[in-house]
Image 1 (tube, rainbow, N blue to C red):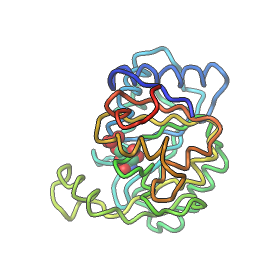
Image 2 (tube, rainbow, N blue to C red; image 1 turned 90 degrees about the vertical axis):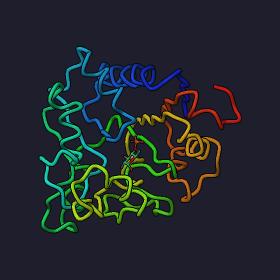
Image 3 (tube, protein in one colour; image 1 turned 30 degrees about the horizontal axis):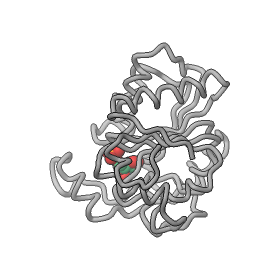
Image 4 (cartoon, rainbow, N blue to C red; image 1 turned 120 degrees about the vertical axis):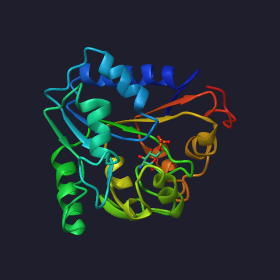
Length: 237
Ligand SMILES: N[C@@H]1[C@@H](O)[C@H](O)[C@@H](COP(=O)(O)O)O[C@@H]1O
């Protein structure tokens, strides 16, 4: 695990951009993408740059179940507004939030991932060490799956929706087994609210209780964290 400690999230975005540029310059064609507040500065740096993804494929980590792609809270909408509108890909895959049969959609998405092996996957991390929507305790051999969101996640999202009924209760998520197949992984984390999760990921035991600790077994991971997220690490980087 290569650990880069930066001053703040803006500096983290520059480091994240450099990893994307290096991958593209070395022939990467398939990029695994994440949403949330963490990767925003990396996407901003990519949008400002002359990087060209028009011959590349993107595969997103997760999407809510039961949400329309044009809903401004969907992950599809997030990706379009933060990246795709300015830096289009030849093709971009996300789970279909409106799939009539989620079990069929899971199979479809697994096939998408099998047919488009990911060269570089960017990840954030939840405060409890989750990656994607793989919460603590998730089995490590799982590929794409439907997740019942935790109460805390539903409550955290409620503020973005008109009414409680509109808040998605489930999500499609790439599983840990799929994530680990990526050739190279970037995991970004910023802020002291991620310090415990970062410590568990890097220095903690390799356990299902901290989903991100699985990355200790991956041969090519770049961790980009700010000083606040690094604050509980015993080793100085
Ligand atoms: N499904 C997303 C994850 O992909 C994301 O990494 C995490 C942290 O979000 P943030 O980057 O906003 O802290 O939240 C959600 O659970």
